[in-house]
Length: 218
Image (cartoon, rainbow, N blue to C red):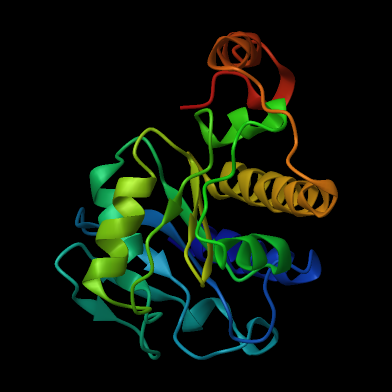
């Protein structure tokens, strides 16, 4: 488990270096066992800035909500737990309050296929989940629905969630979605951009099956 602890801490630090999170905002998790065969996940602690965080501050939880460690788990642990339970092909969850995804989430609108790279999120759109109080079960329920057949979603008036088969993949999706949100917001300043059709997006998804870093992703 120590290797996964270091990977999670490194990913959390990278999110801050990239400006995708800051201070105590956002959180991340990775699926692990507890060493005794019990499945669960590591999640970043509540209310602690990444520059103060060590591997020993990361919190192990099982899928019943039990946890152990010297810190309390992130207040958003519910959607980490629910996503990992309902998406067994995914092993990492990243949540950010990044500038452009969060700004766009205040419009409570999906990001449409204005650019073919929308496909990295797994569909023709990046959905925006309805608003719910942070840390609530309702927020987790909304996030699960918005992530159906997707690798990312916005959370209304809140931020973004990205998921991946591992932390590296989840981080790549996070970066790309933030870039797309910036591009879409800039395009909206000039008007409504032309959108790709469903048929054009199908071609992109087919092309992605053999396209570099995005090929053969679950």
